[in-house]
Amino acid sequence: MNKQPEQFDAIVIGTGQSGPPLAVDLAKAGRKVAIIERHLFGGTCVNTGCIPTKTMIANARVANMARRAADYGVSTGTISVDMKRVKQRKDEVSNLSKTGVEKMLRSTRNCTVVTAHARFLSDHEVEAGDRLLTAKDIFIDVGGRAAIPAIKGLDQVSYLTNSTMMELDVVPEHLIIVGGSYVGLEFAQMCRRFGSNVTILQRGARLIPKEDPDVSEGVKKILEKEGISVVLNADCIAVVKKGENIEVRTGSNTVEGSHLLIAAGRRPNTDSLGLENTKIKMDKNGYIQVDDYLRTTADGVWAMGDCNGRGAFTHTSYNDYEIVAANVLHNEPRKVTDRITAYAVYIDPPLGRCGMTETEVRASGRKAMMGTRPMTRIGRAVEKGETEGFIKILIDAESKLILGASILGVEGDEAIHCILDMMYAKAPCSTLERAVHIHPTVSELLPTIIGEAKPLEAKA
Image (cartoon, rainbow, N blue to C red):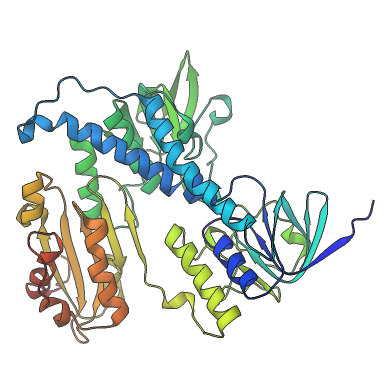
C-alpha cells in the first residue's frame, strides 16, 4: 500500500542533545516540524551516558568517603552498598531528564512527535513506521552506541556495555573491563568503590592513550591505589565460558571474573538509516561527513552530535545545535572549527582537559612554555585530603596565548574552565597571571603556575 506523504518544513531525526532544542527553535520560528524518536527520549546522555553514570559515580564517591571517614576523625561503622537503591536513585535522576525532554517536545506548538524508526527513502523523504514524511530541511541527530570488537568467543558469553551496565542491581564479584579509555575507567573505579574486584585489560601500552604519558601514568596510579588491576599490552584477547564465570585470555595473562564489560570505543547509529538511498556520504567508520557548518553532502541535510564524528560529548552535541541554529535561523556564520577541544574524564579525582596536549604542542614545532604543579602543593587539595594528580598549562612563547591544559586532580573538571575561557577570549596568559582568585581554591594556583612557566625543552 502506498503511503500518503506528509509535508513538513523540517524533520529532525533523533532526540539527543542537539535535536530537541533545534526542533523547538524551528517550531518557534513558525516552521512546521516533525521530530522522530525510535526508542528513548534524550539520547545517550540522559539514558545511558552522562546523567546516569555520573549519578552512580556520585554514589560511589560517597561509599569511598565513608570508608575513608576515619582519616578525617569521623566514625561511621560498617559500610555496605545497596545496589538496588543505587540503581533506583540513578533511574529517578535519569527519568526526570528523559520525561522532561519528551514533555517539552510534545507541548511545543508546530512540533509533531513521531515515535518510530526513521529510514531515508531519498534525500528528503523519510519513512517512520507506517508514515512517510517529507521536508526541505532534515537534521540528523541519531547518536552512537558501544562498538563491539571481534574477540574470539565473545558471542558465546554474556557481556555488558555502557548501556546494560546501567541495569545492574548487584555488585559484580569481579568485573573484567576490555578497554582502558574514558568509559572503562569510570566504570572501573565506580564498581571498585561499590565493592567489586576490577581488572582493566588495555590493548595498548598506556591507559587513555590520547592523553600525555604523564597524564596516563597519573590516572593509572590513582586507579591502582584503589586496588584496581591494570593489564597493559593485553593483545590477542579471547573469551571462554568457565562455569558461572568468564575467562579472558590475553596471550600472556588469563583473568577470570564474574562479569565482562566491553568498553572498546563507540560507533555511530547510521547503519540502519537508509543513507545508501541518499547523497549523504559517510567515512569508513560510518560517521556522516559534514562541513564546517555541519552540512552533509546532500543539499538541505545536516548531521549533529555523535553521528558526525566531530565530537563525542554532550557539550559538543549541544554546540552542534547552536551552530546549526545560528546558521539556519539567524544568518550567523558559526563554525565547528571555532570550537576548542574540552572534556573531562570522571574518575575521582577527575581529569579536566582543554586545547592541545604537551605531545601535540611538541609535534607542532612551535616555541612554547609550560607550567606545572603537583596537587600536593595546592592547599585546597591538601585540606580535602585528596592530593593525587597535577596541573599542567602550555603557553605559546611568542604570542603568550594559552595552548592547552590538563588538570588531573580534585575539582579539575571545574577549574579547567578558567583556562578554557581565557582561550576563547584569546587573551594573553598575563591576564590570568594577574587575576586575583579566591583562596582557598584549586583555581587560585593557576596564576602562579603561569608565572612559573618555563621554556618547553626538547625531550632527550
